Image (cartoon, rainbow, N blue to C red; front, side):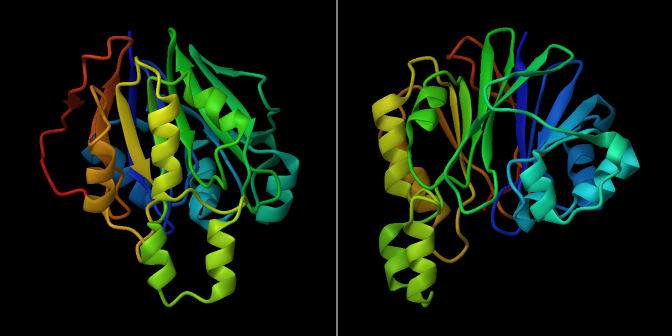
Length: 272
């Protein structure tokens, strides 16, 4: 019994994450087109028929741009809070729309999806933990700072998609206007490499087998840099950088922290 996880895309150009077991799965956010989602899942040998629902973290375009078409075409229920739906301006079929509340698990087959609030410049933002048979995978992106909710949930995860959005020196030297730099650094912005690393070093549970460094800035971060930064402190945890250009491999998450091999779809390509 295990969870299978994959990043279908991660970055300001689109975010979509897959978590499931052998029988059912969920998607967290759909910020890529339905066509691209289908192509990437097919390459990974993931069956869209196993997907039982989509959970939406917040209304920013890079998290919802493919949602309308995907939900309608595949008749997938969408779990989204009323403030997020209102601010998204999405036209979802009413019969497919469901809400959720923090820390009240939603059951999809044997999957248990739990939302918790986060700090981000959106109407009603949430992060998620997907659990199955005592195994938990977290999706922690678009987070302004490591609040108590983030820390508490991080400590419970066997695997986590963890935001490492920007390198502080690269952001400071960038051509971004001052107001945008302040927004990114704010407590309603994004986690820097240093903030993510602090969370990892101080609060990583001994059983955490995988960390997927996610939502990297195209202009203010470098995949090799952040991978090297975390690798110095990884111990037995596998560090993977989630790409903004293509899907990751599918990784099998077990209660056994020593099992860290991807379920390979038969191809090896650069993630960067």
